[in-house]
Amino acid sequence: QVQLVESGGGAAQPGGSLRLSCAASGSILSIYAMRWYRQAPGKQRELVAAITGAGNTGYADSVKGRFTISRDNAKNTMYLQMNNLKPEDTAVYYCNSVIRSLTGVYDSWGQGTQVTVSS
Image 1 (cartoon, rainbow, N blue to C red):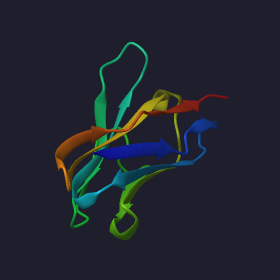
Image 2: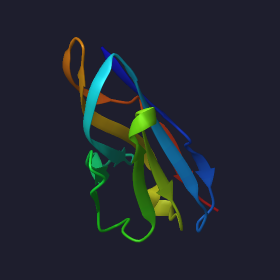
Image 3: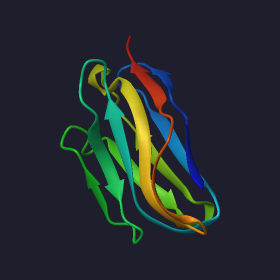
Image 4: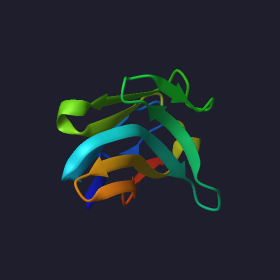
């Protein structure tokens, strides 16, 4: 079995920055595309950014130019650098990936990390 664990959330002021991390652990053979989602209170979960194994990236329009997704394949870790944060970025952020391990293929989710942007 595999596990994704997010870290780096917290509080920030508008215009500030935070960096989220998502570390995968377990008997990992390969990690496919990795994604960050977020869910604000009363709203549906939305895709924020994605990155392929080759490093190709995509972003939601609402975060383009402000957020940067990256991954370190050697560390089985994905990052989300969030700059120029806005109050509407407040949400629980989740990482997601399909991971092949010694015991099978898993569509894995992290437990979520809270990001709160307010003055």
